[in-house]
Structures are given as structure tokens and as C-alpha cells.
Image (cartoon, rainbow, N blue to C red):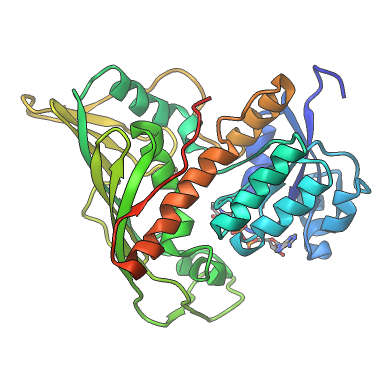
Length: 358
Ligand SMILES: NC(=O)c1ccc[n+]([C@@H]2O[C@H](COP(=O)([O-])OP(=O)(O)OC[C@H]3O[C@@H](n4cnc5c(N)ncnc54)[C@H](O)[C@@H]3O)[C@@H](O)[C@H]2O)c1
């Protein structure tokens, strides 16, 4: 592999999101090349490899031992409960690892991964990476330019993604490591910290709705699932900057009449789209204006799965910290882990981590 050749990348976990990563990464073909895919279900890996023209497929153990060919960077697309063990397995095999969110399902596991990566001089990072796209950069640019004056507060609402109606096996979304807090919360907290800086403390209450849910997705492999996590959590966040806000994370709110993320400033309100959407409107309304104004999106590519992986590949080559760094993912996880802790202890939880902007 020379300086000008794309960095060889392997994908572990060939489930629902896999195809979007393969296609997304191909948009960055001059920087990364998918050379293998692996899954504990080896047949699935082989079938998906054939369908999507991935050169080699096999087991995670074969992949880690380079028996499927050499990958310098591995993308972890396994379910949340497997994130820490799979990331550890590939860090120990000497690979840089980019993982889907969350970084791990416990802070202790996440800390151990950051320590291991640092001792091995490897990069670890992970989703969400929406903040790299031009929709997020447009919002951030508006805040930096002072378009809304001084940001004071925000409201953010995660409503139900109705995963039972589109994912063939949505069980993982209702298990520890997911739920609205760890499945969708990372997108919103990542967008909020990108816009407003790190979180200082948080208080939250949460509850669980029905214990069993019906699966209605076409091609479903299960008819019902057991709910093992809170399905409605509501939090108050205090940012280092002094900005305060509320964040509701719900698999109970099926219908939406609330903003995705509204940021209230001394002179105006900035309204962000769902922090996953591409080329979606970022709107602003000054107090003295009658109507909302759509901001012109900044130049550049909008969000596509794999953007953070391509950035990590560039950073690995430059010996730099990736934008979607492990420290950033850890901060997001610490914030979201504080939701359950606050609910149990009935008090504000201080957030001790922070991260360096790239
Ligand atoms: N599906 C989505 O729309 C979506 C969107 C954003 C993020 N994600 C994230 O992507 C990840 C994967 O989600 P998904 O929906 O593709 O899940 P999925 O259940 O469809 O697929 C996961 C795959 O990982 C494999 N796997 C499980 N344990 C493994 C292990 N130890 N080693 C190797 N392979 C293993 C499974 O066999 C399965 O094929 C999750 O972290 C999820 O939060 C998914």
C-alpha cells in the first residue's frame, strides 16, 4: 500500500446497515477500499460479499488473522452489545477501528478500549459522524458567525423511529445498549455537542411502556420482541458554555409535533433537521422577522455512511486524531450513560470527560 493507494478496510457485521456502509465507503474510493467482510454468520458474510462485490468474506477470527487479506482499518457494524468485544478483538490484531454507535455499552468497557488503542498506538473512533456533513456544518457556521446572537438554550426531541415496522429483527433496539437513549441519543448528543460544546451535567427521569411489542416489518424474522430498556427518557442538560436545554428520547412518541433540535439565542432561533438527514433545511428566525429563513448549505459533500471512516483513514495517514474520535464518542456515551444513573439516583450527574476538536 503506497501513500496514494486507498487504505484497505474490512467490515465486521453484515446485517441491516452493512450495505449502506459498503455503498457509502465506495463514495470515498480514492481513500478507502473495502477488501473483506466478516460475520459470526459466515454464510451471511459470504452471501453479502457476493451480492455487493466485496472481494473476500469469512469469520471474524479469519479476518483478524489477515487470512481474508490485509485491512489496516476495521469498521465494527455488529449489535451494540458486541461492540466492545469486537473492537477489542481487532485492536489486539493491530487494526485501527471505527465502530457504529455506541462506542460500548458501558463506560468501563469504553475506557478500556481507549486505553488499549492508545497503548497500541492505534486509532479508535466511531459514529455518529453526521456532524462532518454539510448540513451540520451549515448549522455550526451560523452559530460561529453569531447568526442567533448568544446561544442560551435548546429543545431537542427524539421521537420513535418505528423500528418494529421496518427492521426484520428489531430485538437489539429494545435491549441494553440500545433503546431510544443509546440507539438514537448518540445522533442528537453528538449534534448538540458539535453545535454547543461539551456537556457539564445532566439530570433525567425515564420509564418503560409496554413489556412486549409486535413486529410488523416486511420479511420479519420474529413476530414480537421483549422490551428490556426504558422507552421514554427526558433529560435536562447543562453545557460547559452555560447553555441549558431539554432532550427527550422516546420510543413512545409515535407522532411528532415538536422540533428535532431548536437552539434559542439572544437574537434568533436556529432549527436543525433530524441529525441524520442529508441536505435537509437548516432554518433561522430572527425575533424581528416574520418568517423562518432557510440557510444556504455550505459547499461540500453531505452526510453519507462511511464519512467518518474516510476521515479516519485520512487521519491515520496523517498521524492525526480523527474527527469522529474515540474521545468524542466517549463523551457522548458518558452523557447518555448519565441518563440512567440520574433516573436511579434522582439527582444531577456531573460529566467529567471532554474531547479535543480536530
Ligand atoms: N440498521 C440501521 O438502520 C442502523 C442505523 C444506524 C446505526 N446502526 C448500528 O449499526 C450496528 C448494526 O446494526 P444492524 O441494524 O446492521 O444490526 P443487525 O442485527 O442487522 O446486524 C448485525 C450483524 O452483526 C453480526 N454479529 C453479531 N455479533 C457479532 C460478532 N461478535 N462478530 C461478528 N459479527 C457479529 C450478526 O450476525 C449480524 O449479521 C448497530 O450498532 C446499530 O446501532 C444501524
